[in-house]
Amino acid sequence: MKMIYKILAISFLLGMGLTSQAQSDRDQMEVQVDGLGCPFCAYGLEKKFKEFKGIKNVKIDMETGIFTFSYPASKELTLKQIEDQVDNAGYTAVTTKITRTDGTVEESKAIGTVLTDESVVIEQSFFVAGNCGMCKARIEKAAKKILGVVDAEWDQDTKEITVSFDTAQTTIGDIEANIVTAGHDTKKTSADDAVYEDLPGCCKYDRVNN
Amino acid sequence: MNIKNIIGLLCLSLFAFSCAVDKSPQWVQTETIELDSIKPIGITEMNEFLWLTDGDNNQLVQMDSTGKVVRIHENFDRPMHLSNDGENLLIPEYGKDRITIMERDARDSVSMVDSLDAPAGVDFYAGKYAIADFYNHRVLYGADDQWVNFGGEGKEPGQMYYPTDVQIVNDSIYVADAYNNRIQVYDAQGKYLFQFGKEEKMNAATGLHVSGEQVFVTDFENNRVVVYDKKGTLQQIISENLGKPTDLIVSDGILYVTNYKSKNIVTYKLGE
Image (cartoon, rainbow over all chains, first blue to last red; front, side, top):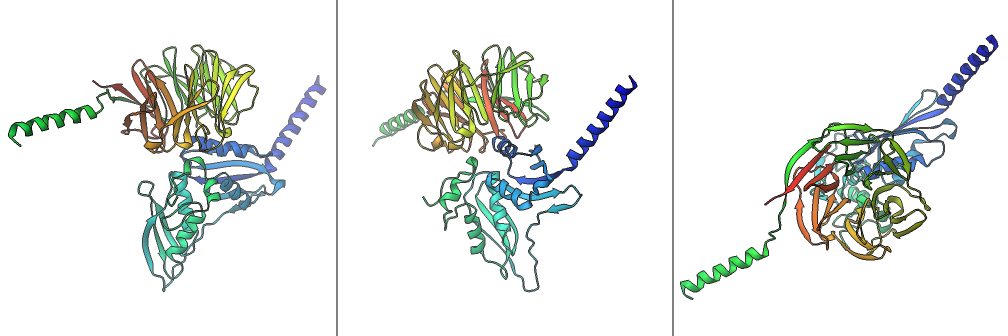
């Protein structure tokens, strides 16, 4: 009988060790995704990520837009791969963070515009076509990607984006061009048809110049 | 022109104007049922209870008609626009690619010959199911090993772009063609009949309910409910106090609208 207890105890300890090792073999990922207002799209993002072999512990918090999962450390998933995957699914990653198994943390960093003595910051607005919260996230991110942009806010009702930018570092034309590249028409320029077609369903706004 | 002619002309104009105004009774808000942490998506009524799917929390909520939660049923995977067959609840599990049949506490699933990709809506009538198959941009209609499917990705009449809800009405199938921002109607063989809703510029027509002579549609991003007759003629737009509406039903003369963002149900009755 004692032997049976010993075997059981050893098995239990071995099992604990394996579980612990399995946990420590996984990197922890956290992505803050903007514009997850529609449950069909949000659950779709979760569902599509579940298709990747090796992904576990997939969770999505609709209130905060934080999407988390774990992934085998041996596959060395990068920040860019995660962000590309989010983009491919039609969403916008605001911040991305990977906690590696050794405790190292990798984080994506937003472009930070540094103002100088020569900076002249002005505010301008222009029309950008879009529909929903996901559009808002994509449009604002495209504007903020331009070095020299201090702030950008798109109004879902008026369809106007208001940008503050340093005229010494960029122009309103550059900002507009980047938004168009992201798939959104302005009054002057149309987005590429293929990019428009790849937008999620809820972002399919009425084309401006068609 | 003398004074009599002028008065006569005025009376005639007033008469013509009154004929042009839609005199059909309008739905008027009566109550708001707050749901606290529940974020409702689908709603159905069975056995004098209201049943809500709460996709964020992966649960089914059983309520009495006053809005009091009677019981929570857990362990669903993103349940969406549910329905019932009179005895069983039919719950599309978006994350599990199946339609779950729930009779009391027992769960089974609808047997299919084809696979689903994110079922978002289901209905049952006269022995047949209709299923809105979201990522496959189609509707499946039938039972056992006899199914037809129709739609296909696109914007042309008859094609679909992310359908989210469906209802069988006698020999017709009404589909919430969500991201084409319209309702489409097909016959029982899946042949396209007609569409409506584009004129109202809906933005995500997510939920659908046909009751009597009216068709109710939730216009998710615009925070509206749009009411049509069964031919698609606009009858009313309800836009007050709605927060990302996802689904609706009419039961005992009350229109219940579930609001995903506002976390509540708003009710309406027909005015005089």
